[in-house]
Length: 390
Image 1 (cartoon, rainbow, N blue to C red):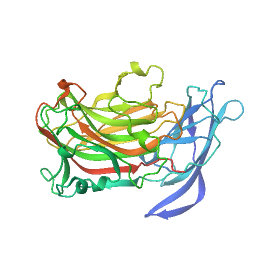
Image 2 (cartoon, rainbow, N blue to C red):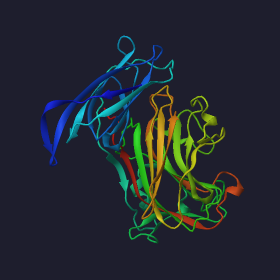
Image 3 (cartoon, rainbow, N blue to C red):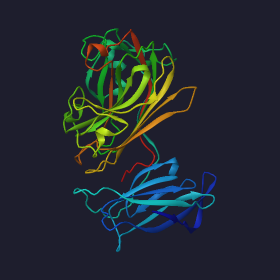
Image 4 (cartoon, helix red, strand yellow):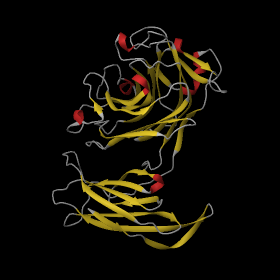
């Protein structure tokens, strides 16, 4: 169902950063099938709109500085009409937009949402670690990760200026090491930054990584975001353990540097999840999603990005976007794994960084084929553009 959304420009303008900024209100309705209990509206605009308020549904996604919005809701007017009112600001000529409203799958868990305002803010740093101290003392080396728990791998960690002027965190993987060996096999810890909200549902993780003398082997883990309950229950989703108290969203490398999302998530995914083209299902360990959609490179710095939007409780509308950008060459590679369920309970939120890296897999064939290292710098967690914060 397509309809034109016309902008009714309010009188008055502001001068912001040298540009004239005008207020706008837009309102329109679209009819949906009678059996619809839940819907999604997508709004594509011809230029950026800085959203101030949305009434009639919940803004779940914003990209391209407000040129694309997704709004989900259950509210309907008589005769099955979905009506939306969106208020914001723009500069220059009044934008035009096209709106598409479609029904979503019904669920016994859906309840009608009260119409409310959605507050939006720009990307905000929660935590940033540009480099590590030049030291052999592990506690001092990791002071930028505090507070952290469940740390292992002291014998694999060091500071290094091998590929950068400011010390990076270097991780050593000994030849033949993998998840089940004892020494020099990688690193693991969970950190929850002090500035992180206890109810975070949208976060972006970035880090720069350098693969040094990497033979890749069969597979290995890379850091990602994690979450669940507050406290110990959130740290359990790895190593074949997948309790209902947590989820983890690490990345992985595969043979030849192929990248993927490696997700410990609930088993009650959408119907047909195991048959999706982008899923290699695993009932014993994490789910492999989007394998080969990005590729890591040996011997060069690259920036890895993971953006997570948690699902609405009772629905499979969560998504994870993961990207790799090689410094000084080529376009950014990205893939969005959508229609995911990361949580089943309202008290489960994003809790921070699962810094986890090693070869494996749990079998000897998964071991490091040669002595190698990774180097990490510019680690950052942000609340993304368009996150709902109040």
